[in-house]
Image (cartoon, rainbow, N blue to C red; front, side, top):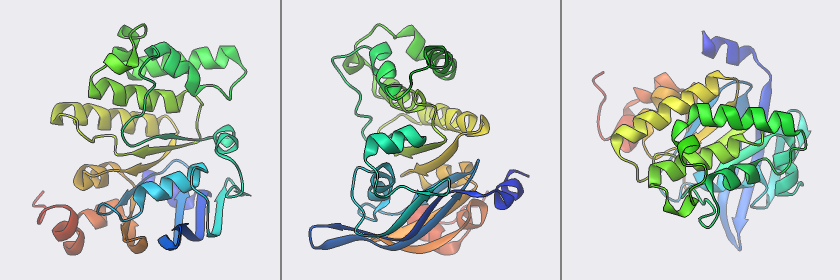
Length: 249
């Protein structure tokens, strides 16, 4: 049912013939990508495929060489990163990148730096603590002393504090124990079900496709495959390249 609703929804994000260069090297080659309101879309690919670069370009952290990015009908590829955040796009980056010498509460407060309504910020903080009770327990603890899993919770929670319409998640399961990965993915599903559109870049391709509505596969900066996540999950090429063989389930 969710997929049918998303197919009828208007796009919240469109990348149109996007090209990105690092010096003379073109990292993204004419990428076309669409995300609809309410969807959870995953981007798959090997290391160096351009997945993280795509997220950083959407956030305004890496400049566009050619092409356009549209968010809610507005062109945003000429905006600075804080302006992109103000429009409703936030990112939980690869490697978490929490501010170690600051407390959990201070890290979360920084996530809301574009918001002036203190009552709404307080409501948002309550939701983040509901999603991640461990952060509530650790709110006075220095972020640098948290476990890897707790830092990942904090990175996602910080991104949620800006009340995003579109949340970008870059490798949220990286380096985490399997049990904690399951918990993080359950929380990602809950965030999406609460109405937040999500783009997920994730090394665990099987888990990502089981969670997502649709997927895109990149190879060396080029789009080579796209479609419903359920179809990609059982595609022989995807199975062989990214899932370590055929899925019997």
